Length: 421
Image 1 (cartoon, rainbow, N blue to C red):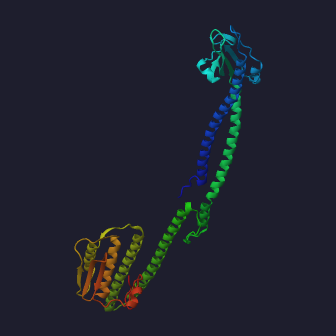
Image 2: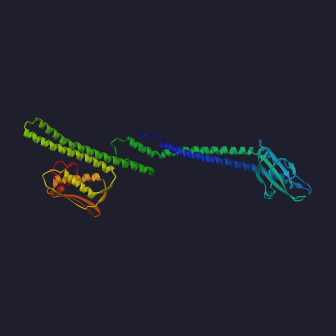
Image 3: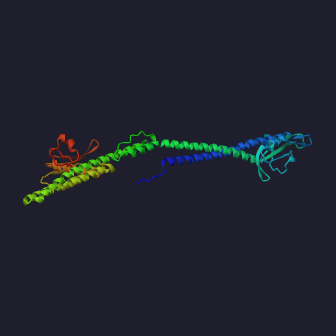
């Protein structure tokens, strides 16, 4: 059972939506900071202008300093009904000339020569933005900078910052929504080749193992190639199994039919001598059937191992010697065959499948003993031009060259021979 997980489309859109959300959040923070800065800059200009207008009215007659704050200096600052304005003017000796005496905004006269100084402060429990501007008064007993301090509460600044932030936020959210929609459309289009693969596979029958034959984008080309490779391997497996089943059914059916016929004849035979002959034939037929069955099972095993077993180091010389000894012990007959081994005693190692190689060598020895060898059978192992050579030789007549291709087919024998393996 294949578990159905979250769709790839949903995952991609979710990840991209998260990225867009993080980006939108950062933009909103930046928009709020930018809005506060813009609001401060706008109202700071008004504060500086008001302070400079007041400073221009500071005058001295040589004995006293006078100041006459103009109404226009506060007119622009008073446009915000919720904001309160505070101010004071002090002489070079820090004596109050006019304004709010309790306006505790620090005055640093060392910085006044450079121009108005802006700073944040607190007055009567409220946060205020203040500006300190100076005017040099030379013709008095204590010459120096008279200071003008103007402060304003922050309600108007905060309102302007919020308004700018809301507008920027609406734009950011709208653009994020449009971007998310565009991302969804783009992801859907990018995943269309996967749906094409799904459609092709779903439309196929269980026996259609041909390659997909789809032009795939570079990013999923490896996926399509892997599916084609898998289907090719599966087709090869199915083909081999079909051939094996057909060969097995054909080869087993014939001896079973003959065995059934001989048993039928045996059941009707009354002559004891002929019954013994028929029993001997049945034994031979049963032995052939057993040998054929073993060959079929070994053939199936070799086919499976050839496609699934990884190679390991195999000592060909040792394998040949052991297989030869086992094969000779299993042979019966009245022929005196000289069996021998020619090759090195040390290991001759190659990468391979020891079981499949042993089965192949055993088959060669069996066939040579049964169909070829008259007096001599030799297994030879050696090296030839950088490769390992394993040969099974006998002194029989050999196979005619016209039969070479035919006898390599499963269950075939040379012309006039018995059923092969």
